[in-house]
Image (cartoon, rainbow, N blue to C red; front, side, top):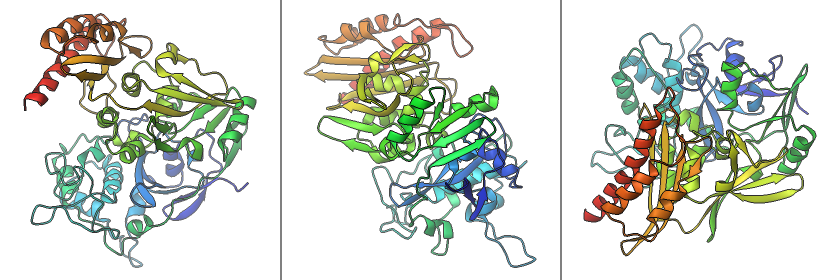
Length: 505
């Protein structure tokens, strides 16, 4: 087996002698690439962002920005990354490098002051700069056509939006939602984002998108008594987990990375599943949508392209783009957190999880999956292989996340609705709740109260009073129990108001 190494700015770099828990951030800084900064060490500030070559949706390769502070360096064995230093083009001998277009715009428009956050912003901005379906608008107000060379785009629904969060050059500011700045007030950063053009024909990183990303490699990296392991197939991985029931299983490391950095947790054995082909499939049949547990949320969002509206509502409110570029549904469910954003949505969708071990597979309804605080029916040696969402979908859906910040925050309360309303009668109601009990739960009493009733203001108000009493909300630093209960009730009234507005308009 080849010694683990990462291609950094075009140069193969051995991971040794780093420890298996060493993050990409520390790995880079120890090698002199100090543009990558540590701000929070938990994936909330984006100062550590780097670009990773990943399988693409519209082209063979996408340049994806991730938090280097969360990902173990060993997890990128065989992969290819670009840091803020690698974006610039080397100049002639004795002359400074030629700035990347994103760097140039940030400089001339005042997007950098103290400069600490700037390299992370530049990397996130570069990922959006190279997004193949980013569609500028031409002088006539329509999107450019054609593509394949970086000058056009594969236009999809809403591709040509221009508003406060989408520039005339097709730049989506949500690409920067995981990057924080305390100096500029953000306006000059937005100016820079909305000023970047399209990649030139000579741009090597744009040309790189036309080639396949690095293939997954098996990894066995051991230092002392600690090991980071990745097998090539699901079967080999499940056999390994049977042999090592103490192993910590990671995909995007967006949760485990925080444990390592903030709580100084160390594992004797970490097993990576993020590159397993069997966990990275997405199938739509007449009966269900099956989503591989190791697909990132960004990949799911772009591949589904709105076909599951409730998931489409969830994705923009789930942390930040930097986190969604690494986080997975399997990881979000595997942690068993009662405040995870995906479980309420998946409960409302009546989803199930496919659990696999060395002996075979079993399917468990998500409503029966959670058994206690961060506990589930998943047995030692089992993995979540996929999530299944049954079809057809309920037509009336909504996801309400109540948090102290609009984006990139942990929810105080999360509520997901999926209703079938026919001829003015609620035929079926499914409501998933997060943040109001030791586990994500279904609001069974409220569902029963809605079903068979006319979808009227009176029904919504009566059911809202029941929804306020669902779960066992607690007082904590995010919200009081009374506030959580009140928000539950208001969320149903809000849903009714919005559905009637849609009908009247």
